[in-house]
Image 1: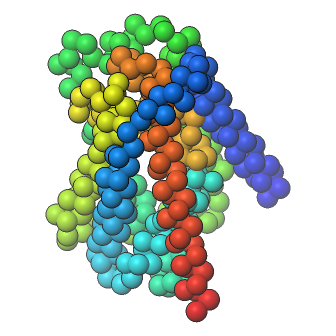
Image 2: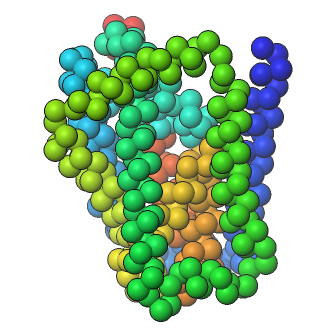
Image 3: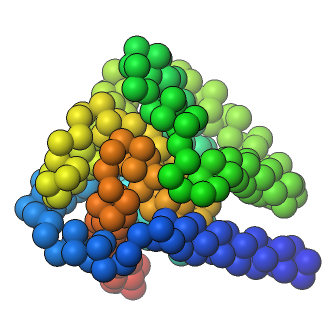
Length: 320
């Protein structure tokens, strides 16, 4: 037990250090005053539609999650699901992956839903989203083959920032390594029981009757993610000329960066990846970093406010 705690702490510190390192690397080759100058000239009117879309994403996710519970013949109040989801994202910013268990614990307390069952629905959601990301990535690769000035070709000849390729490869390897370590560390009786219950839950969910609404909400969620990237392009005059396809590329790269179990929603990894991709698209490093700060910073603030509100509401509800 003590050794496991030490490993957990070391892993936490390692990922925290990685995030800080990548954050420093994203600003290593640009004058910070230039970034501040770009931020000062930004048009932040886009914050209003992005805020609305961010709220809609929560609603879409609750609706989709509720479909899974309905297929299992379990009734859960949507306001409790919303609070659990908001608290999940908030906790994940501090301790990646822990938020998923937080969702289960909240529903266990508010609606008496068995943890293994709710965890099964969450893993099912994550699996669907992972498959969607994979399909979008493949679609991006296919679309890239039709572009003479493809991002892949630019990446192959990209030498404006030293060690950029090494850092990109390092992000991918560390992502796989962190997942492997996580699986090895969790090989215990609890996980075996969870796997057993998860298999049962998945078998039930595969007989999902409302597949139409489920996949419609899934499509709306990913469309919202795309708009939450594309709309921010109009904050700065330099990035406003980027195409909708380039916004799609940035979204894919940014999503992969966020999948790394780094604290604060992949902070550092997201900034480095997005600013580097934007640089390959012809955007200055100052504007690319400013855009990464705005996109990630707004989502961080939104998650913090909604998560804290959910916590206060749940605290009041459970005490009452």
